[in-house]
Structure formats: C-alpha cells, structure tokens
Length: 353
Image 1 (cartoon, rainbow, N blue to C red):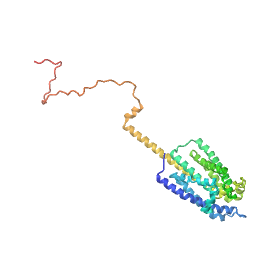
Image 2 (cartoon, rainbow, N blue to C red):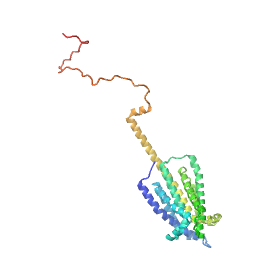
Image 3 (cartoon, helix red, strand yellow):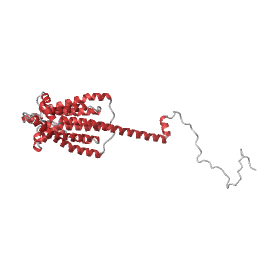
Image 4 (cartoon, rainbow, N blue to C red):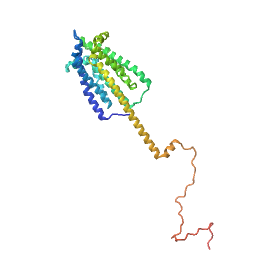
C-alpha cells in the first residue's frame, strides 16, 4: 500500500479548489458565445467568429487537465473538488436556487449550471479521485476477464448516466427557466441524481478495467469537434432527440462538457496507469526488503529456522540424576611441593600402623 504525503494532499487540494472553478467559468463564458453564434438567425457558420470563445474553452480544458494530473501525487485534490458536485445537484433538484445564483454572479458564469456543466465535470473528478485512492491501496490486477467486461460496462453506464442527466435537466431546470415555474419536480430531480451516480459508477469500472474510458472519451471528443466543424450534419441529428433534450444535449456540448469529459477521461487513464505502476514497484520493493530481512535473520539464527521446519519428536525426555550441589571440592596437597606428586591413595583404604 502506497499513500501520499500530507504535503502532497494539501497542495493538490489547493490546486483543485483554485483551478477547477476558473476552468468552469472559462468554459461557461466561451460556451455562451458559442451558443449565441450557433443559434443566431441566418448564421453563416463562419468559424472565425468562434476564435475567441474557442481559445477560452481551450484554456479551461488545459486547467482541467492540470487538475487531473495532480492525481499522480495524491488523489486528495480530486476527491475534495468532487465533493462540491453536491452544489449542482442541489441546483438541479431545487431550480429556485438559480434565481439566487443569477443575483450574486454574472450570467455568463451561471449559465453553465443550467445545462449541467459543473455536475458532469465535478462528479467525474470525484470518481477519479476515489479510483486512484483505491488503486494506491491495492494495485493488484483483477483479471483479464474483468478488464474485457469493463470495456463494455463503462460506456453503457456513462451513456445511461448522460441520458438521465440530460432528461432531468430538460424537464427540471430548463423547464423552470422557460416557464418561470420553480416548484420542485421530484421526477427530474431524481433522474439527475441517478444519472450522476451512473457516471460515477462508470468511472469506477476503471478500478479493474484500466482502459474502460478510452472509447467514451474518443466518442465525446469526435462528437464535440464535429459539432463545431460540421454543424449542418450534426445538429439535425441532435434535434431528433425528445423535447427539451434536443436543447440540453447540443448546449452542453457547446459549453465544452463533451470535450472536457473526453479529455479528462484520457488524462485520467494515463494517470491511472502511472499510479498503478508506481504502487506495484513500491510494493515489490517492500516485499523484497522483507524477504531480505527474513533471510538475514535466518542466517544468524539457524537453530530457530530448523526447529520451525522440523518439529520435535513426540517422545518423553530422558531422565538424569541431579548433580551434587554444591560439588565436592578436589583434594590437593597444601602447600604444593615442587617436583613431587602426591601418592595415590590405596584402594580400598588400608588401616594405619
């Protein structure tokens, strides 16, 4: 088991708490301009007008990548920032909170809440931190079969979660803003919560399938790029979605939600492989050190090792008479005579003269 230091936890937490809100603001500001340009009447689709918004979103995506990279040193930052996904969940369940947010923050910042951008990003970051923490504790592989199954399970969970979140926002938050009816609607709110849990579950599949997020990441990135460069072909397909969802889905992509998810999925995959390799090498070094120490102990105390391998025979111990205590002193001539040895006493003793 390899744990990060307290310093690494504090630094990564500060980085995540500072950079993630800035990244979300940049994505939201750039996304609002993208939406106004895309849905403008008689828009000619000139990409030159999107240069500024795209640069803002690229900068925001770069900051999110930096946040994910902090997982190499510690998963604390990702877990801490993931806890704040509760805020967009509250906004989705209680749409009346939007009026309060619009009163204290610029509209360009809050528009991302309407389409679920913070929820998608923060929930994913928190799940990634959880996976990295588990991998650091136990980096052992879970088997090739689970790895193959995860390649199919993760995309299904992520797709189901995205569908549930999109439908819940369309019927909840967007419905409230369009009709100025901010009453709590249990169905859409429950759908958003379930969708967030499905996204978290899809990411945790990487616990035993390291490359489970590669295919969803590529799909999201390709879809986001095609929406910008070939919108005449992509937008009609998105408009075929159910009512409400045909507005939330393209808006979330234009706000950078798809590109952000795709890039952090790929970055997380690289970070996960790095953490697994480091944890395994640290575990191997610890095991080798323990084996070396046990070998040294065995060399210095061979009797203990022999006794441990070969138990004593089940026979009673031999009985010996106890020695005289204290032992009788030896008789020597006193004082000793040089060059003369004492005569041996006759045996048996003879009577004296």
